[in-house]
Amino acid sequence: MKKVTTYNNKKVLVMGFGISGLNAAHLLNKLGANVVANDQATPKDPAVVENLENEGIKVITGSNPLSLAEEDFDVVVKNPGIPYDNPLVAKFVEKKTPIITEAELGWEVFEGHLVSVTGSNGKTTTTTLTQLMIAKSNAHRVEYAGNIGVSFSKVAAELGPEDTLVTELSSFQLLGTPTIRPHIAIITNIFSNHLDYHKTRENYINAKLNITRNQTSADYLIMNWDRDEWQQIARRSQATIVPFSRQNKSHEGSYEEDGKIYWRGEYIMDAKDIRLIGPQNVENALAAIAAAKLSGVTNQDIVDVLTSFSGVRHRLQYVTDYQGRRFYNDSKSTDIEATEVALQGFEQPVILLAGGLDRGYTFERLVPYFKKHVKAIIVFGQCKDKMKAAAEQAGISTIIESENAVTAVPAAWKVSDLGDVILLSPANASWDQFPSFEVRGDKFIEAVDSLIKTEEGK
Image 1 (cartoon, rainbow, N blue to C red):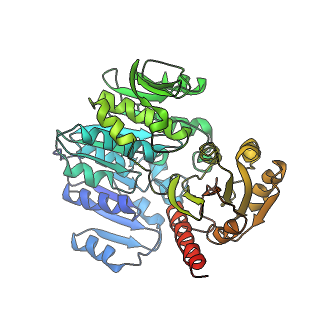
Image 2: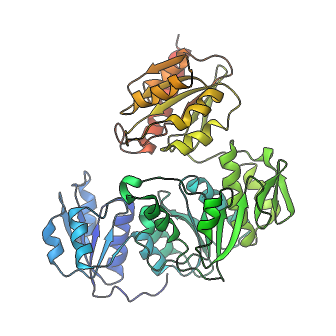
Image 3: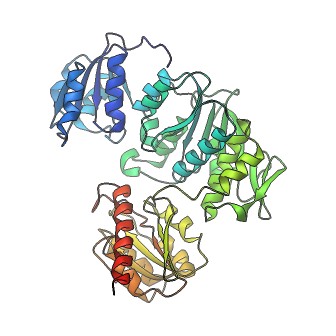
């Protein structure tokens, strides 16, 4: 860990008791800060508060009292999910109090080699593939952290100058990272996500571009080159641009041509040998290959990872085969684009389980994919009527309404045939029925297990 004196005797407010917030509070305390930890909820586990208080950290739970804004905090470390129009956060914005996220704190104490990944879709798979590839060719520690369920600051504090950290960073995290400078940055793609938080697409793009804001020509920005807009966005960076292209639009980085994967003209492997299914995973592989090659990874190590890695939980995750039906958990598909690419990964007939939080948009964009891939659809959640309307427009004859992703499993089974794929790919956030997409995916898997037990017990 880098020696940091920035926070010594500084008064710091940590907002949010998630994984990142708790680790930030503990780290700041070690760095000599006077820490106040605040969460709008009261933790169910009293040990959370006890552990903080035992370190001398003041704890306030149950609300975000506006009176905190009247105290002279030097810095606020905000949970990324708390919006900037939160009344307490807005007070600090008005006072011009620096507001950062835990990712910035992690960067400040990290002294090794940083690779950072962002994008609308594919972040976690790309992060994982990149970490696995670099680890195979590296004698030092190579870890992942960030928006992947692992605290950036905790892992960063444990690593030395020769170690590598591959971080997944969300747009929410990047808004609070004024000095972060990865040596290698990856932007997998940019669609129109989280506009309820960012308000405009341009704000969202600017948040994503914070990943490269402090890079120079000595650093690398790996960018998806398959849309003209993304090419233009990349040119806003001062970093050395390294394209990747599934559509063979550039040979200056990694690309697919005639079903084969190349790095700057050098053959790596056949695309069909990538174990992960779907065109989106070819793109994720290409992004990871670029980062790996820039990090000195051998072709054989790249091939070993791509032919063996079977996927990240909840991201087009293969669950099981049963009586000729194949089940997939793609609960992380919380937007239309993710479900589009998921459907393109299957040649077999798909029974789709879709629906969730109503964010105000409709699903006409999915109609062509429904026509080509979907034989039946089970809809649920707040937006089930809108999803049903798109399915009717696509001419799907079997449309079933269900309560949620759990009850949809037996409904899908009843209309399935030998050779079908039963796919949970909701195209919507989970928050109308589940606290997270992870919980939704776990419940789906449990429902599949329960279905199989029931069928075998007949």
